[in-house]
Image 1 (spheres, rainbow, N blue to C red):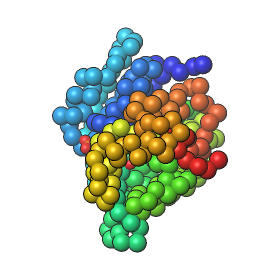
Image 2 (cartoon, rainbow, N blue to C red):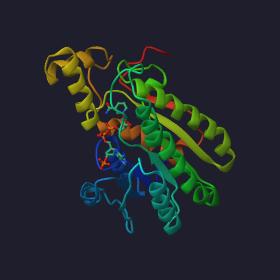
Image 3 (spheres, protein in one colour):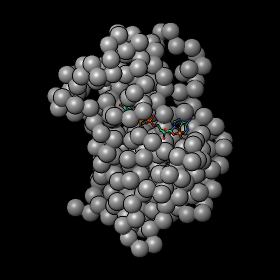
Length: 262
Ligand SMILES: NC(=O)c1ccc[n+]([C@@H]2O[C@H](COP(=O)([O-])OP(=O)(O)OC[C@H]3O[C@@H](n4cnc5c(N)ncnc54)[C@H](OP(=O)(O)O)[C@@H]3O)[C@@H](O)[C@H]2O)c1
């Protein structure tokens, strides 16, 4: 199986922490030159210092960017792609806050669409010329299992994720003829800062401790545990690899079997 990403340039967003950071590590292990993007520069520098170097000449870097600043984000990614074409784009960032769909403010929906749909769109538009010129491209969006099964008390997130899934499926049809694939990875409960926030919300709503909240989550997962970020990252890295060249337009759950739907 060809997993070699030597000579490929990957842009991994939301990579100062969590799933994004784990994805950057996996792509670097497969030989890619990785640029990590997020808001906190010091954290990004630390990630770059930790990224594996597995071949001669492999270089990693960082760019500061905020998914909420659409034009600045577009400028940053366009400039990066002009310096060196981007072959692999991992669209990832922070998840929207919790709460019901009914009670969410209109601005919460607008903000979430900006952070997810518009940030993804602006990055795709910036990297497409390079991918088309190379005749090869991989786009992987980190979304959520709520694409298939809405998650209670994540109303704005559920809504936005559905939009991202529809956008990605549409793009898969448009970009396929250019040998550019686009797929979604849907993490289940994954041990990151994001999960800590979800646990805190549950404790506030239902009481208990972090330990009992995680146990309650794990009890509903066939594999009886939450995921490690590296396990989600492995799926991202596979979809970014040459081996996944005939896979496009899918949403791959990495959820320990939690979803009920087939
Ligand atoms: N963990 C889970 O259980 C789980 C489950 C389902 C779906 N997901 C989804 O998977 C994605 C990643 O989750 P995670 O658990 O890895 O989250 P995380 O640990 O909170 O990490 C989020 C990353 O995104 C960056 N980020 C946040 N806001 C940003 C912004 N406005 N602009 C640019 N970068 C931003 C953060 O860095 P900076 O703060 O430096 O910007 C950080 O690197 C999210 O969409 C999340 O909702 C997670």
